[in-house]
Length: 459
Ligand code: SF4
Ligand code: SF4
Ligand code: SF4
Image (cartoon, rainbow, N blue to C red; front, side, top):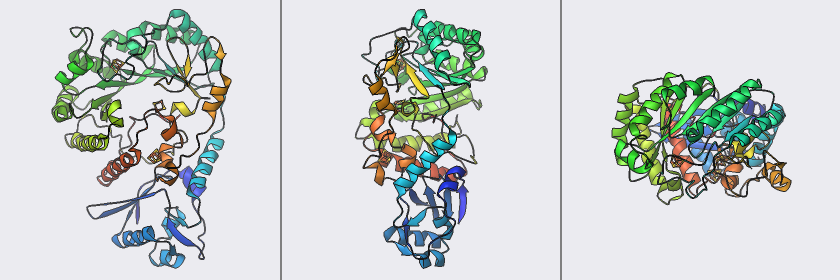
């Protein structure tokens, strides 16, 4: 056997066994995922994130353990002790879920509990110059942050921030539709000596060369996610800008150049469904011609939010992985960051389950824990502070492990939060995770580690 991807050392230190019991019976851990392709045999531990390649004999022995528990002698005879030490194989009475929970608890305790907020997701406006047919904010009343609210927000950040650099995430609506308020907030923070950096989700159609420079210098903008809709004709139809003469595909391509030329990292998120997917290969060639091998531009293909809840979503995901392989083949703006020596277990899913570190703030200064702004998940505002302590306490409580997740190998990747806490959760989560895992493992065999940064960051 041969480790082809190192896992999280911290987890290994907590869960690995020093000595195996010769009396015990052994089975595969809940967190062991096995996969074989083209006569290569892989075993993946979703808790440690380690991936090991097995020989055919070892693989056959693992298949036997998958069917029924085996003795220590069987483990020894087949040279699988190392898999038992590193917890791919565990004793039959081992409590996988409890071990996972204890590991996360220990890691959180070791990380300490620094006081203060580290991340503020700010909506400068819920308005937008586009009218995407799929916008999940359709129907929201348009609200735009005033200077008075922005001034109070700056006070609020100073009062609540931790004593390190804070992360500002500009979200909307279209945040650039109120870029004035972004500059206002950043100027005020700068005057007060607050250290900050920022990132943004935008359609980029309002980004100019001058603004990109300001974004780098004043906003400390490090990363931007630009949403695209595939080929030019799909883009025009889907974005449906109020003023398509001023705001259109070509303007956005220029904007991406301006941002990238400033050294800002640009992630192009290409939203697909069954209506535009056929034209994506041509579009990928267009992107290659447009951006060549510019280092800081990455592209990833993702389903439209609504499609994730459609019964054909797995079919769509299969197409997306196929296209991502094609993207790799033609070598265009790949979302592949290179070999990783180490990875970290997720101790939280996203900003929404760490309300003592992260907060979302609407244009009116209202708190939320999620950028989709679920109505009931608010507990106060920047003017009055906490007005609903019961709701805040509820959001702070760790989510219990769902019955379905307690039987699923992907629990360490999803965390207990995802299934019952994220509005993006979808019914076919398990099947999707299998597809994604096998895609990643295939890439690993080809020498590329596809750790993507298109997901919500752990905080
Ligand atoms: S660009 Fe974003 S905010 Fe604007 S309409 Fe489209 S999805 Fe909605
Ligand atoms: S959310 Fe779905 S994929 Fe994730 S652990 Fe639960 S059942 Fe598994
Ligand atoms: S990942 Fe889900 S819960 Fe977290 S912020 Fe995004 S939509 Fe909200």
